[in-house]
Image 1 (cartoon, protein in one colour):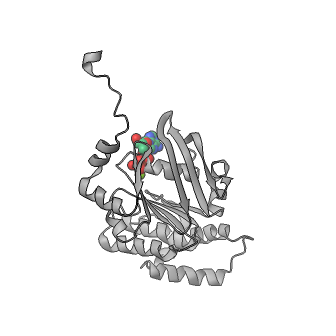
Image 2 (cartoon, rainbow, N blue to C red):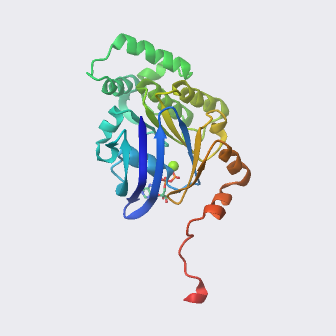
Image 3 (cartoon, rainbow, N blue to C red):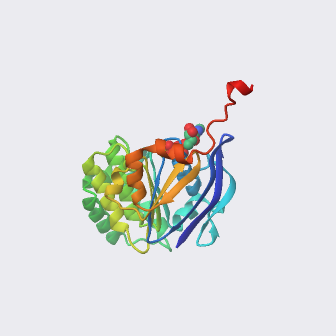
Length: 259
Ligand SMILES: Nc1ncnc2c1ncn2[C@@H]1O[C@H](COP(=O)(O)OP(=O)(O)O)[C@@H](O)[C@H]1O
Ligand SMILES: [Mg+2]
């Protein structure tokens, strides 16, 4: 499967955030999307999932040739797109068990889930993610620590078994052990039928999920792309290097002398 993003532009409240993003993602590949805060990484993730707050103002995205941006968000999920949120929301009143079962049902073509087999799988996935089985009866994310919320996002991903997973800073705020568990979840799905776009500000998680491709985003554009070696360059030189080398027009303040 292939996800093609072509010159994608989007804004929020009339403010342009994405200024022409072009990226092609194929199943079998792991891509990392890095960039300073505010460069538009989360916006790209949200636009691809169909978040209503953002307005697409140009370009397109195609999933195996079908126009992704014209699909309702739930259709995008049914076709195998998944987003692990940077800030997972709490849903009081809905238990983890109920939520995951409903989400999983949507991925079964006729909606008829083999409940016994599903529960067995869910328990195995929870063990794999080193999560206490007691989470099944808790309300989704309510009172979860930051690390528990992130693990919950990855558990969701394992249950849904998506073709394209976007992980939005799933690593931020995690200690090294939690980070390794999150990476383990991604590496479990890694394979010919899976693609991940791992969004991160730091290189740390990429020591555990080795990306095939790395893209650096800056001011709503992909400033540069490369292989895993780009992570190292970035680590050594910092984002100032990106800004200096690829700094697409700095803020358009007229120099005082020309006023
Ligand atoms: N809901 C929102 N309302 C207003 N501005 C927003 C909203 N979401 C994002 N932005 C703005 O869009 C820009 C890009 O944000 P974001 O996509 O979150 O960047 P990143 O994930 O790379 O840190 C920032 O300037 C941010 O303030
Ligand atoms: Mg973000």
